[in-house]
Length: 105
Image (cartoon, rainbow, N blue to C red; front, side):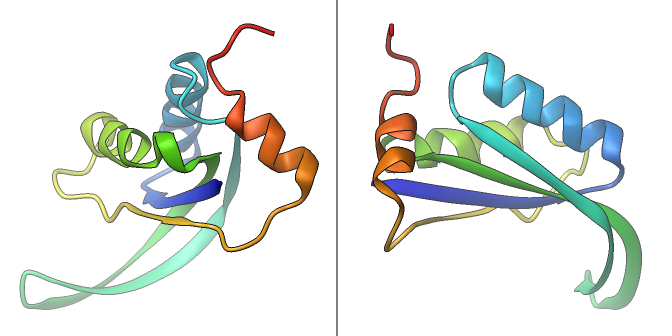
C-alpha cells in the first residue's frame, strides 16, 4: 500500500537536501517541494508565523515509519512537525512503483 509523509522546512534548500537524502536511501520514490507556504502556529505558548517550504514524500507503507523517523533526524528544526499516513487509494502503477523501492530492477 502507498503512503505519504509531510513536513515543512525553513527553506527550499533544506527541503531539497532532505528529499535527496530520502531518495538516496531508497526510502521514498518521489518528493514534491511545495512553497513557499505561509505557516501560522502556536509554539511554546506563543503565536508565530513563518515562510516555509513543504516536503510531500511518496513511499510505501512498509517504509513510512522509517521515512518519518529519517526526516525527523535530518531536519534543521529541533522539533519538526513530521506526519505520515497510508493512502486509501492509489493507481495500480503507483502502487507497483512504490512497492518496489529499494529492490533491484
